[in-house]
Image: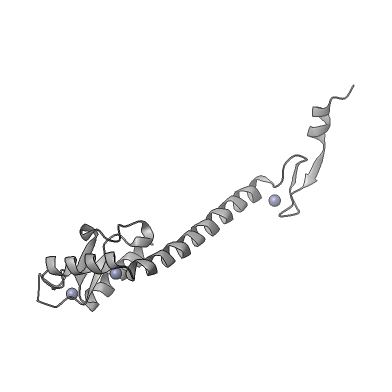
Length: 132
Ligand SMILES: [Zn+2]
Ligand SMILES: [Zn+2]
Ligand SMILES: [Zn+2]
């Protein structure tokens, strides 16, 4: 007598992704492809998440709360670039998020904000980009 499980083990089909590796009939992909599919899904999710958070940060920069937090930061920092302070006095031209909003940094928390000049702001961002 043949029980169902024995049939199940003997039946094989080809992986629906690579069309090469044999897999069990109740599986969808071979081991390698299953891993790739998982990774692709994750990457796609991360991409959409980033786009979404970028859109959110646009809204943030137009909000009243942001203008208030920005002004408070500039006043706290005496309108001076905080990275230049050691060597020279430069007026700040912008307020920068220490932990980027896209990475979950607090958008309106003055503790996450620092006043910078153009050139130091560029430096900070190239450092952030290097890390990513
Ligand atoms: Zn495969
Ligand atoms: Zn500076
Ligand atoms: Zn910045």
